[in-house]
Amino acid sequence: MDDYTASTYGDRIADVYYRWFRQGLAPAEQTVEALARLAGNGPVLELAIGTGRIALPLAARGLRVQGIDISGATVARLREKLDGTDIPVTIGDLADVAVEGLFSLVYVVFNTFWALLTQEDQTRCFRNVATHLTEDGAFVIEAFVPDPARFDRGQRTSTSWVDTHTVTLEASRHDPVNQRVDSQHVVIREDGIKLYPVSIRYAHLRELDLMAKLARMRLRDRWAGWNGELFTEDSEMHVSVYELATSG
Ligand SMILES: C[S@@+](CC[C@H](N)C(=O)[O-])C[C@H]1O[C@@H](n2cnc3c(N)ncnc32)[C@H](O)[C@@H]1O
Image 1 (spheres, rainbow, N blue to C red):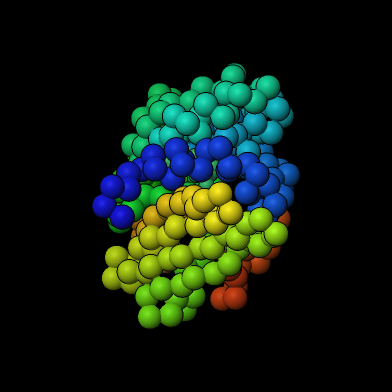
Image 2 (image 1 turned 90 degrees about the vertical axis):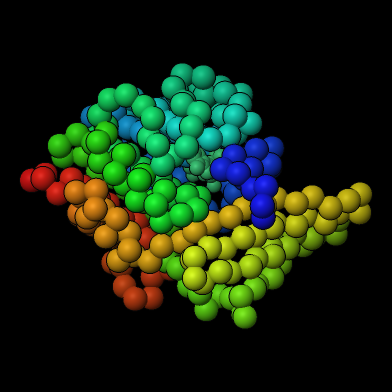
C-alpha cells in the first residue's frame, strides 16, 4: 500500500470508528479501572488517543489526561463529544512523544503500538516514552499476541459482518520477514463499496522486552487481560507494563 501514511487509518475510519468498535472490544471499564490504578495521581498520557474511548472516562475520574494522535479527523470526533474539549491533544506521531513533562502513566491500547511500521520506530517510541516517565511511572502496551498461523500462504480473508444490506470482509496480506500485515476492511453495500485500509507491524513479546531494555526499561508485569489474568502460552492478548530500569 504505497500511499498509506500514518494518518490514513484514522482519517478513513474516523466516521465509523465508534459504531464498529463499541462491540467486540474488552469493556472499556476494565481497561479504565486498571489504568487508573496504575496512574496513581497522574498525570497520564495516551499515545493514539483516538476519539477518547479510554481517555474520557479516565479524565472523568479526576485524572489529568492528555493525548497524542496523528489523525486530525479522529481528534475532531473527540472534540465533538460533550467532555471532549478539555483534553489537550498533540497532533503528531506516537513514536515521537512530542509533549512536555513527566507522566506517572503512558499507555497505548487496542493494538495501536503496531501502527508503528518499523522496528526502528517502535524502539524509538520506547526510548521517547522513557524520557517522559516519572521515576515510578509505568508504560503500558495492550496488543494481540502475534499468530502467523492465521495466514494461509501469506494471506487471509474473513467475514466480519453480514446483514441483509451489508457484508464486511477483511482481506489481509502477511509479510513474515518484516512482520507486517496490510489489510483492507471492505464494506460492500447495494449502493457501493468502501475501503478502510490498515497496516501494522507486529512484534514478538521478547522483542518488545528487548526494545524496553534498549530504552533502559524493564517488564514489571504481563497479564492476559485487564483484570490481571495470568499470561500463559495460550493467551491471545497481552497487557505489558514496563517501568524504568532504575525504579524501585
Ligand atoms: C484503533 S484506534 C485506537 C484509539 C484509542 N486509543 C482507543 O482505544 O479507542 C487507533 C488510533 O491510532 C491513531 N494512530 C495511528 N497511527 C498513529 C501514529 N503513528 N501516531 C499517532 N497516532 C496514530 C489513529 O489516528 C487512531 O486514532
